[in-house]
Length: 147
Image 1 (cartoon, rainbow, N blue to C red):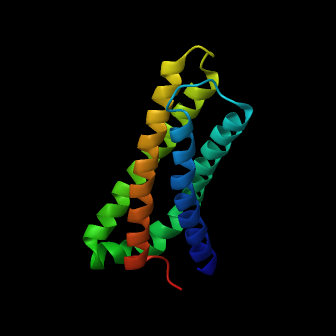
Image 2 (image 1 turned 60 degrees about the vertical axis):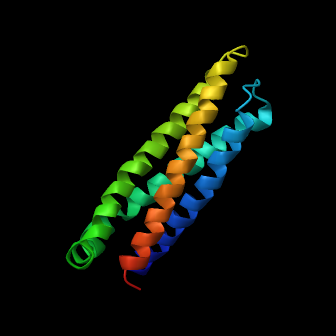
């Protein structure tokens, strides 16, 4: 159980880091300028961080379903439903980040509007990631993995 607790903590920390990381390309792409080498790296690392946060959530999902969810449904039904919502929002964050990253990286040099759209998608992903991390913190405080 302590391994699940550790992975839950890592997952949460990666989620919070992803919120901050998603803001970086959202800010730097907003003017639509062609990508520098550093920004290309930033986009790649941001997307990888979001995917890693999502993947760590997947690794603890079976343990959550087995050990946490039944008790949460009995004692804190509203919070259990928030977890279901959190899962769907997290999927949206992942798809928005992947889509924005691909759009920004493959856009032609003169496609300013595409990079600006990618910035908007990154901003929406950052906002949704903040909601996801906040819900995850609440859910864990109410009924996370036992110590």
